[in-house]
Length: 154
Image (cartoon, rainbow, N blue to C red):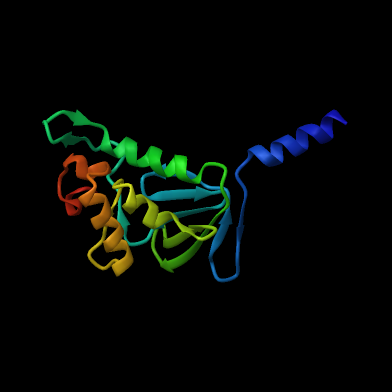
C-alpha cells in the first residue's frame, strides 16, 4: 500500500505532458524564464511576447534598480504553477514559438496584462491592447524605465 501511495504522490508531483500529432503540447509546465516554458520532453517560447532575460535589471521611476528579469520569470512561474497548460506551436524554432492557454486564459496575454512582457511589433491587436493597458496602469515594467526590447537578447 505504501508503494502505491508513493507512486500516486510521485505522479501528482512530477511535471507531465502530452505531445500531440500536430506538435502542440499539454500538461504541467515550469517557467525557465519570463517567456519560456518547459514541459517534460518539450520547451516552448511564448509567441509574440518578449520578456526581459533573467539577469536583466530595470530602474524604477526614481532610479532605483530592481531585478525585472527575475520578476518576469517569477510571474510566469506563479501563473502556470499547478495548472494544465496547452501550447499550440505557431512557428518553428529552437525553442518553437507557441500560443499557450490555461483553459480560456491566454498565458501570453496575461504576461502582457501584468506588464512583465512586451508585445512584439508583429503581435495581434489584442496583445497590443493588453500591453497598452499595463502601460496605462503602470504595471510591471511600465512602473519605470527599461532598455528597448530589441537589445535584450543579443
